[in-house]
Image: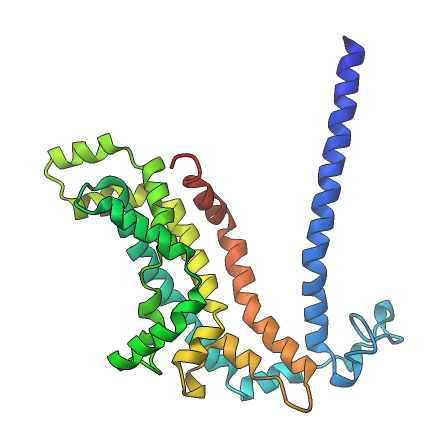
Length: 290
């Protein structure tokens, strides 16, 4: 008996060591490119291909610290990267809030309300998830042209205001987190559907709200194709498009491009580190019941 317990304890230690080894290797695969990006943004263009990380020299830790520079970040400021960042913050924030509220309302209606055509609406939502977004660029562009919304922020926000994927996510979250008995009790007390959504359903699916806010914010922040189709004025371009335009035709400022990339991903890393618990709990809140 004691021998079996010792063997099980040894196997548990080996399993734990293997899990930690896999996690450390995965962390290294993620962190090393970020370290390289930071180092590349501080190097001069002539040092970009001569060293993997920081330029070698006689300084502390064998690094030529005097060869590092912040000129790339100064150049970004002169090129108007701050305006592009503010535009990205505005677009991502407004789109995330509007899309999350619309998806939460739609998911609540599909999950807990009974109305004619509900099954058809659910089928249409699932069908819309299957359609690749790039196939909707041409008809979306024509519709925005007819509405006079080209080259406007509304032309980017409104098409993303009711995502089918979000509606289905909130439908699943509502089914698993909002008991129908609770809604019936609220209706008996005189609570309407809108009040029931805001006072009862929305607080119960708040983990999914946080997760979907982050998903939509990240998707809008990194959106590269749609702004180039909808917007024509370069001063209105968000950060993802502005950074891509730092590339030259015959000459590449690699350090400038890496500095722009670092500026574009730094807010996302900070946001995810702050909200990672809500993000994980939100994604798992609708994974039990369908």
